[in-house]
Length: 337
Image 1 (cartoon, rainbow, N blue to C red):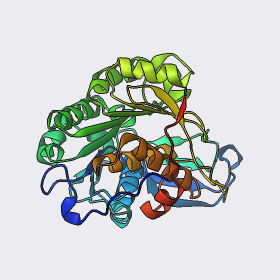
Image 2: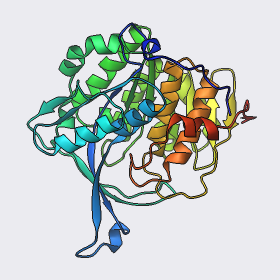
Image 3: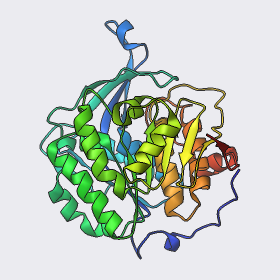
């Protein structure tokens, strides 16, 4: 595994004195997890309620990796947000800055699929999360300028035109304050078109210290390739300083600007559900970068955490502790692409 990081006291956390190591901007969703494939569901099919969304998944992973983490989101002003926020707090995420809106929380239905090729059914039109706006970013300005790192995504930017501008404003605020920005394009064709996603990517990439993306899904839609090294080079040409490309369960390519190399992904012998694995990678890697680890070590920790996460159901069903992650993480400079 990578060299063990030196222990940090609570006072060591934060890019600025009293600030958060990581802030995560995005959407929290109610997750309805069916016990069968969606097209096979019948009357009386069992399901369970949990809480997920890429922002919560990443925030939970960042907190588990040792970062002082805050969630910046808008949730419903009703009873459904009580267990949602309770779950986030149980996962170690500070939810004291979350705002409310007189709209319902978004929700989605899914079934387990360890291969990552899942069919989601969403209910998020006119959701509380979609009311995210630049006005919220202004109100969180001190939190953003004091943060070590920001995580946000193309999903957040696709919720509404105001949410798109909020993503850009938050990334610019953190970047200009000297903090790190991690961006995951996370393209969802049912949520936004390619042209709009590409336009947002072009605005965010120059602000991103790490761009995490998938191939072929994101790469084909956004940079016209199914080749991970080519995708990384094209994202870097847009301005991203480093790019991590996940290409299935066993391949991870890192382009840090000095070269592109494939890095090992530890195998999980008992996979259950890949939902949120990419978010777990993002949250863990960003946390470790904010806490002072090298990019390669942070990526190794991210890959290990993502592998462990697929042992649980749903986006936050299995959030590994950092001790578990560090024990599984694989060292090495990577195999040249």
